[in-house]
Image 1 (cartoon, rainbow, N blue to C red):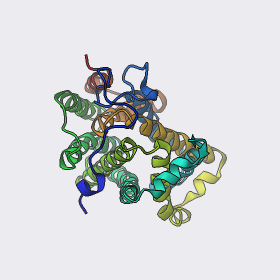
Image 2: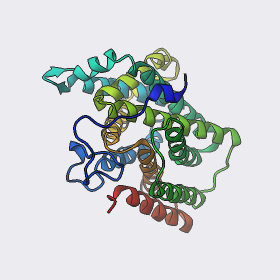
Image 3: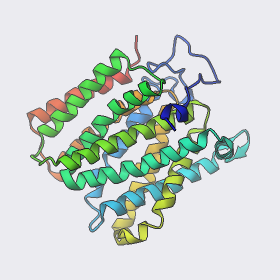
Image 4: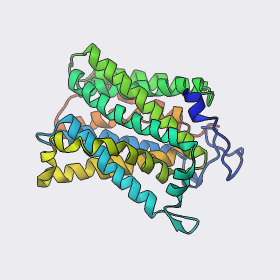
Length: 329
């Protein structure tokens, strides 16, 4: 079954038609974006900043394997997201969004596709990081995601990239490249780069699927809770064999809770909220803030150094993100 068949064309939101005050994304601004410059872009930037902390926090988890960290994040994050979807009230009924999504037969293949994309994204990224280094893996994964999202949008007939998005994405990717080139020397592994690009494709697929389900009227908490809940099911039997002992210590438990509850559950809720008024193509470009935050934390907390090229990359990346966040005149 093709992605075009699965995704369907996004229809206009039933709440209100687009108006002259619509956001730069072309969607009518939702309640979360009213009065805020950038509307739904701000929750997405906040999510990217939280994701940018995970690499630094991960360094303090002594003895943790990449697979155990990935599985722990998805399982704990899935529990938080499902609990959030169950507790939210819609039409005076708790969990109404979950029941509505479960009853929608058209949504089921999209949920399965999104869950598979999450698993592939997490697994491929950590394999890439082990082979070619965290810096290169992060930049290739996050840097390739906007291009993949744009291609998926074209193939599925959902969106056509604008000149503004194309220019801002090119500048942001160039900034990420300078950020890596101006940092500490790191060897590039061809297989690792392939895994990182695969992670970028999977991330773009997840963002697109989530955007389709939300814009079609799904509650954002129900959507991300269901997708992560389904993704956690095959990882539950894997977790005991992935070496979860690091999470049983005091510091390890705090790290696991932060990675799962805050940097996964909370961040993906923010990301889903932003997708209600921001298309997936712009959202994946905004997440390029993640390597910038990771680089800054590496300098401040881990004593890493950035050269002139890296600082120029940070400035170029920041300018590109501002171009997307600011409303179009």
